[in-house]
Length: 318
Image 1 (cartoon, helix red, strand yellow):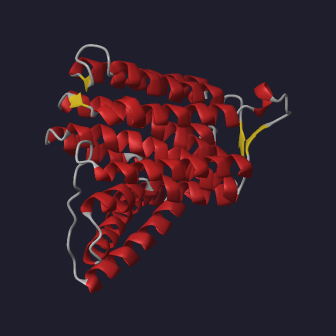
Image 2: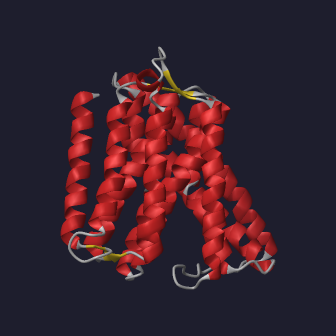
């Protein structure tokens, strides 16, 4: 029972830890005269992906690779179908030109690369499929390219918004960082241990837990950010947050996870890999259906229904 309680509490501590870490780090960066734009593209971006990152670090280190892979695939699918769906229902989401022509295709590229690296059996005829350390290094290489791109667009005011930063005293900022890091470590560990225990108790796969409960739980920062942004009609933030998170999840988090420990991939995961690609394709083409570069409310309803259908499929097949 204690494990289940810590599993639930772990999500709150994990997300609160990420929030404190972002606030403390951003405040110190601001004191060193680092611009709000750069803070948003680095510290805040890393912070919203911190829950997935910490959970994957623990899962990889402990050999729970199904949770590590399921967390990333499940988070990316939930980001597009569930979170963007909910955000566009709140208020139609209008995407900037850069987002449609560069960032969404880059997110699609990430999904395609996962498909390639996770299919050694089909492509090379190997007995097992593994996302290797070399694959991880390739992911990190693409991540560096993405970082270069994000910094290059700071020179233009056209496609980027300033990120508000809380200004704290040095003592309070450092305290936030320490508390945030502690929360991330404790919460991440409790979530992985709880996920394994739940899978064992109910005789279900760790992959199912990773794709559903863990994935949605670690995506709560993106849900909160996108929902609030949509409510405030800052729709470019709502979609940029989700697309950026998907790119971070694959190239940064999955890259680091596979370097820590190569990640074996079950053939069953190909369904999730394909759904991940399909979700990115749906988002791209939705930008050209109806109002151009706008995700309308009816499209948001369709995305949420597709997500519910996917979850139902997982429950009955895993």
